Length: 402
Image (tube, helix red, strand yellow):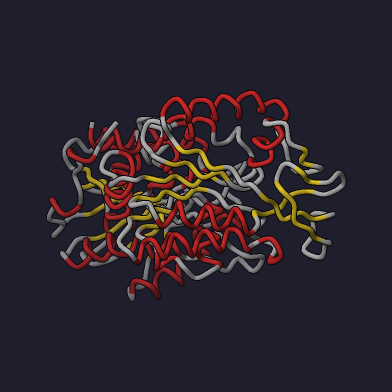
């Protein structure tokens, strides 16, 4: 599945005197004081908004925030981000206390060129996630042009991401976030310079089966890390102590190993492990071969021999995809492996390789180590990115190209 050749972006539209309804992904983390702790997704949308405003258009922004259960919940109100967004845009952003209804329509109709309006959380209406046609139609009547710039929700067939596009015919396009995501994912999926290496980490094999299977046909090397490593190690007859293991996925792990051999893909599994006697940053630690973890101990990170092998594999690659940490990087004592791999990726990037980092934990890791500007691209959508790489048709993309 490739969308690259037919992509329609905001570059192809003149917004002067037009109202643009933009689906953004402002699903940002808020602390207990309802202050934004990471504004990456807001910053990502600024170029799209600024382009439209600078051309003399007006902007209506719609997004979800969190997972409200029963209508309006104050902690999930988008009013909490208005001031921050206003500062970022250097424009006083207007706010509507709903996303549909007569009052919203009045505010939208009065919007002048160059002004920006943020609608209240779409998910305060159950019709949003249900993909309700009537709800989508009401939203569509607020503007002249629909812009989808929310890659993080592109894999959802929701009213504001997929259904709404039906009411705009030719007046619909991708914003810069969506366009950049597709362009950069295509550099891995269909245009990657070889050797291509995929680094797959995280806790469970089960969450990465489909993507590992798909990547077998695309890449030269697959590097395994994180909790899932111990399922592979145990499947191969090793002792992994109290490490996280999916016993019902051991046969699957063995089949992935044999698939890799058949397809000539180098599948790299850790050979040593940093272990702890408790799941705690204060735990006692030791190092062992990954298949010789003592009973009562659990593997929480890769160790030195594995780091050296992984670094060599990464530096010899021209295209690198990273999804998932090497260990429990949230604890400093077990963050070394993830940081080491992140640095190897940035070193390869500085030597001319293309690197794409995606998925919540991987993105959190590059930010923790302040390396986000040293990789080629950081994806804004975890689930959407994985589904794209799996070759699935994403409703939010199909809606614009359809």
